[in-house]
Image: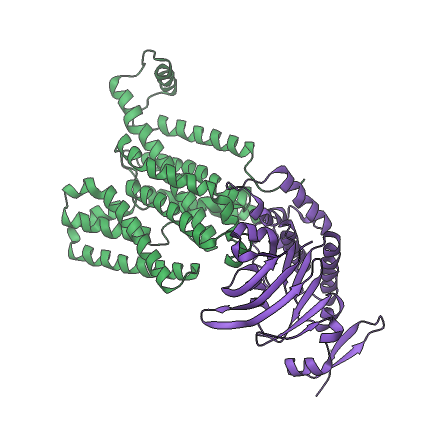
Length: 257
Length: 336
């Protein structure tokens, strides 16, 4: 169980500040979705937690500030899957997922039998066993996203950062992937922070939602608290209605102006 | 249990048998037929301290001419193929070759200048000149790439700029001194000279260090293929890895160029053949390219020495002439 805390995080690229003063607490084993309009700084916020962009402020995992940790140690605590992961096409699924073990390997990079067993277990959980020896280039979109998730899971980090994990997936595959993330997090007690584009999905899966606009936290709370028609219209410059679905979950629907 | 793409005992077995076979072939073939039974007896005599069946002259042909040349061909081939595989990994570009960052252009320019300044006496300095030129070219590219940005695309473009600039200087110097043209051209076409063991020994220390580094870091090349951000999220520092492996690959290339001139094709084709046959993980591609490059260049040198005997073909011509059809064959078989 791993809790994540951000305190006054400011991040950006080469003199351009993209994320301004974000503080948040993500309790161990919970799921926080970061939403917001294009260019709000969602991806940059995730990257700053993973230590991939210059940032000030403090990120701590279970009370330990990650700034004080080495690269490998940090990688053992925080796993990250980018929005458009680059898949080395010729590698097999097994080879690719094994790369997730990198922060756990010794200086010569030799993986042990337990690393291989762990990867086999991850492949089985994600229903990838039959694809284990296939080159990545032969996989469909949904299979690729599962392979990326498998690579991050093989990292065995307590905190998972998933940047738009449903990019390019149809509604069924998107649902299947998010269900999978939810099951895995509940089984392992993993803390998940993901950006999500689809607001209806953002209302259904995460415990809490953080609305980011122009790099600042505009609202944070449960999906019902954050996802109001008024607030979404204001920050997305959109015309939306928030309905209640038959199962009581929220549905964010666009309306014609 | 998951089965990753890794070096297996049968890889090593195939490699050793093939390497042994081409070495034996290369030692036996030549202008003077030494006879395989007598060569075998000679090797046995050397190992056990017995009486040599060969005359003094024959013994010199075997141990001072053919053996060092085979070893040199093997070392140069290993260096070029291993460096080529590394460059392809770092730049995530299948067409990258060891000469990409200005090693060839740098060596060519400095060699031309030395030949022009000291037409006769300069020959002895050509290996050193080529070595310095190759490393200088790469250093220039690295410096230029770093000053304009840290990405691999910038480095690649800096390499193109440096290479065309140095080649322009070389062409200019050559045009002013057309009498040296043949000597420079002969060097550029590449050849394994018969300098005996001294050339092997001069290149060996650099190659040993560089190739050890490249084989050790081959797993990190797989991580680099994920791109800088993902590599960093796995605790790897991409900038540092690039500096180390490109440095080692350039050192190996410079050492190879200094003793053999510019031999093309090996650095691109051998890694691709290995990839098609054994898988795309650099953990397999780098070490097997080392062996495959050695085997390929020893074979190419046999052809270079024997095809038009007693005249000798430039080995760079042979590598392209034999390697290209072979590559197409592998590519077609793989697709069908």
